[in-house]
Amino acid sequence: MKVELIRDLTRDEVLQKKRELEEELFNLRLKKKTKQAQNPVRMRFLRRDLARIMTVLREEDLGIKKLAENATLSLDKKE
Image 1 (cartoon, one colour):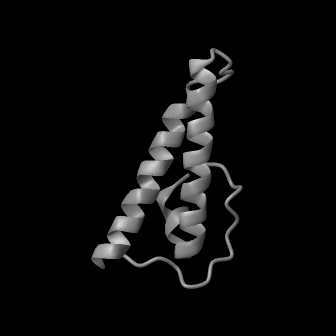
Image 2 (image 1 turned 60 degrees about the vertical axis):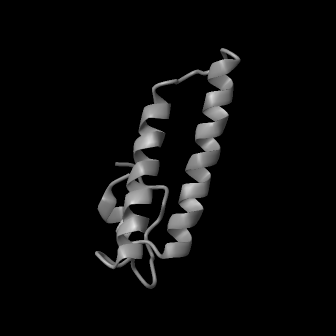
């Protein structure tokens, strides 16, 4: 997910996306430990997306950049 797409979302949508990524990452870690992971490389992309989201949230907290007030973009779009 690109940073521009994240910044076009509202804070609630960004927090929801963060929770979804954390949950998916947890599930992938669990599958990796039980040797059921089909695509372990996906973990790398999830961690990076999660870091991007956390960076954007931190920027907003510090007042560096603002998130959108009303977003109309879909979270399902791929890079």
